[in-house]
Image (tube, rainbow, N blue to C red; front, side):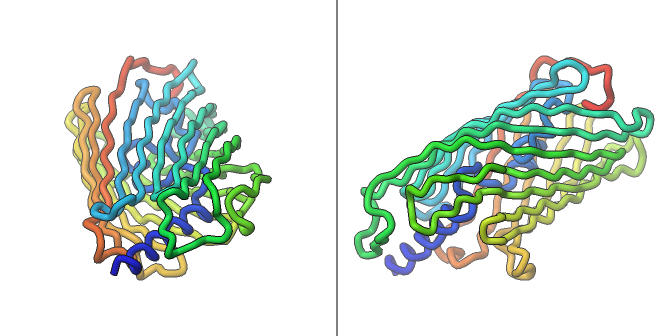
Length: 315
């Protein structure tokens, strides 16, 4: 049984190295009212300095399972622009990466009276990735990895966000530059581009309604091997003036296995004055289902220094 579990973990680590190397693992952080973590175009949208701390623990109950922490903050500058920063630390077995993302966004008004806007964003990424082989299982040798290795990567993200009334659509390309290093394996990919598409609609019965429904879809495509996944999400919010409470559910699957979800689970959260809290639980439905109790994501945040803009493009 121990060898079977070890093989599953090695397989999962290999998946991470070839598909998500040198980037922040994307789970449901963006659903905690923080889409800035997946797109620089959201920097500066809002009336506050928005600060969000995320803690993601996958496959609880399995030793050395993936564990990620991130801190994101963004703020409007002037009336039509915004800046933001994201810092993260990610550990997966004997691999570790940490990095930062610095972002700038500019928001254009297509029609102010019809709430019709277009935003453009760009990020600079810094990432350091390490492999520590000291604790590798000698019964599962890898001839391509024989010593501890590390690499530092510099790259860029670009994105565009379209908003029309309560509809939004964001398209983003992450790690747009090829990586020309070959430190880890002969088959190491040098095309690390990921493509993200995020779209949804916020529906209210009337402008003064306290109840809101937000269906959304998040699509990821990894250029190197063509794999892709989709999140189908549904959120419900209840407003109490500027405070609100929300709950939802997320369903993630590989696009060639729509009826075989990777994970599914509930989410809930609230914003009370300047304090924000959200929790997400995901049941992992892959081969590790019998060895763990699920994945947990906690988000804690604050909104500071309120400052209204003269442009509706940053509302």
